[in-house]
Amino acid sequence: MSLETDSIFKDENGNIIKLDKTIFDEKLKGRRIVVEEHWFPPKRDDLGLKGTHWFCGYVEVKPTDKAYKFAKNLEDYYSLVNMIFPSAIGEIDFADSLDWLGDDETLFVGFSTLHPFCNLTKNEVINATKLMVISLMQYERSENDAK
Image (tube, rainbow, N blue to C red; front, side, top):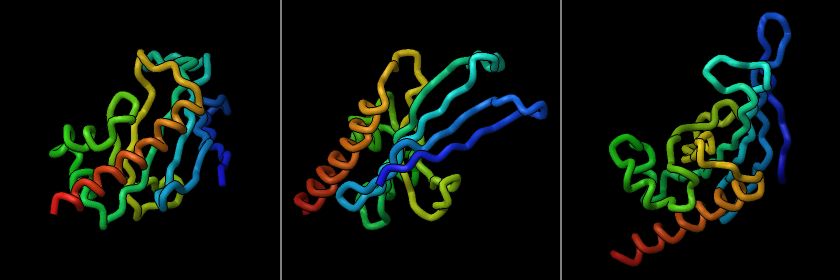
């Protein structure tokens, strides 16, 4: 089931300063996939982000996964985690809960398209995030076969 939920952040004058929207929230192979869209309005000029639009994609990693301990310690296993999820756009730069969606227990890994080289559509980001689940399943299978 896909959702579209908004989080609108306003300044003290009521001007929109940021919009966050969950545009995809489904399960694939038992893994929750979340894709969010973010936007800073054209009038916002702090941080040089005015008019900036980007997506973030997240995939659930379960405690029973071999990749869990690496994802949980992203700083220590950064390269390995990025090898497990090669379809991540740019790089995996997030490993934490999605507490803003009311889920502060589950570990998710994710990426952001807030990079100069990214000019992707919503569907391209959703597909890349789905491919992360396939990559995770392949990694888990290869780790189990290695025993």
